Amino acid sequence: MFRIKDVSQRIISNYLNSGITSDTSVETARKITVLNLFAFVGFSITFVLGIRASFHEGLTLASALFGAFFLFLSSHLYLRFSSSHRAYKTGSLLLQSVLIVLCLYLVYSGGTNQTGPLWIYLVPPVVMFFSGFRRGLITIALFVTAYAIIVFAPFDFLHPVTYSYEFKTRLLYSFLTLTFLASFYEYSRQSSFQRLNELTIELEQQARLDPLTHLLNRRGMRERIEQEFIRQQRNKTGLSFLLIDVDHFKRVNDSYGHETGDTVLMALSLFLTASIRKQDAVARWGGEEFLLLLPDTSLTQAASLAEKIRAQLEDYPIRHDQHSLHITLSIGVAEMEENDRPDDAINRADKRLYLAKQQGRNRVVATA
Image 1 (cartoon, rainbow, N blue to C red):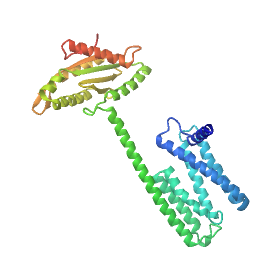
Image 2: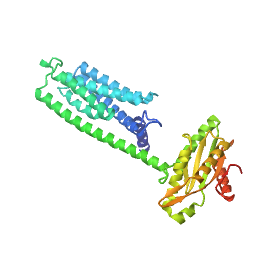
Image 3: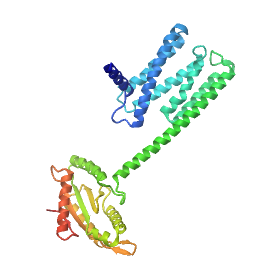
Image 4: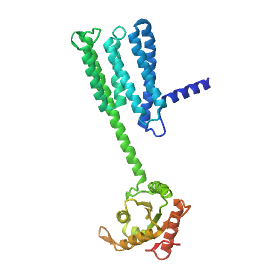
């Protein structure tokens, strides 16, 4: 019993998820699932009604229903077997087109005992869901125009059945009311989804940035390092690191307070950002330590940049309240070597930073 249940759940899941790949966005995956579900409902109902129409209503209506059955099924099969990245858009367009044409045909022909027009209530929610707010409104406006041409043509010229004026107008008013509700819902859903995406992106950015200096934090820098490491391995170019520490930073905090210490770190972050190229990156590595990532840069070039930064900052006053501070930096430099991982080079830069401190601080060490 449980095995049958598991198999059934697996079959349903495989059907609903047909067309979803690892690259499919969450929103598109949700729409693909609904498309597969609606396609199942569509081809199931039209198949059953087509069989019934074959015996009771005649071959014309039956043929229309069987045609719709085939096309509803095709929208699912296209998603299942197509390798195109536009498979969802094509499948949803096919499904909407079949529904709209079928509904207009049922309005024209009357369907079974002139109840065919009642199926048009399916159009607004389906079109709004798959086309979105703006395109959905345009599509429904065209549908309403076609409906009005068919049912309000003089002397019932364009359709073989006669509807009362009250039925035609009430159907139109109720259809427009449903359209308003469906469009309002879709607009609200899209707005909420867009805001949620913006918040997600904002939170992801915050997770990669240091809140004080707005530089990359350790997590953000590690992601950037991994990207540059892959590029460096492919292009066989130089990749160097500068590990920078503010000399005697504890004295700044102890003498002037942590607010002044924060000002020093923020000023230093701006200074370092202004000292590097667009392809470089700087991160607050922890406390008063900063890490510079320098793609396409040899050890000699990195050491030259480090010395330039050290010398310029030595004469760069940082002002806070009534204080004017001159800070110095100790810098360790390392370049990626053959068979290195990024952490190997960073560890060498850290050891050379320690040597710079041992040798009296305010200096650059690029060799062991």
